[in-house]
Image (cartoon, rainbow, N blue to C red; front, side, top):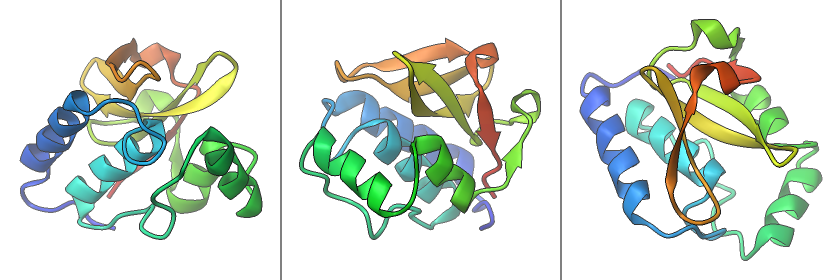
Length: 135
């Protein structure tokens, strides 16, 4: 995957779109937010075959069926892992929320993720436990 020439504008548009959407296992959760940002940056959707989860149980079943223990394992299968301190704007991060891995996107001094209330949440970069290179 390579970053598109206009990736920064597309990155911003994807973040703005998800900030307006309510949380939904079907369309806008921490994984689909990250996938949509990756698609905006590279033109490739890493979740193209896994869209449309019905609910949390369906989401977890799909992860387990694919052989992953969590969101971070799924990301590690798709992207090269890098030290969190080296993550740049548009790269993927993982933070722990209530004991579970949640996908976030590096955006300057913060990482952004979608919470279950539908809000875009900025976490400090230091909260990343894993990071992955995009493009």
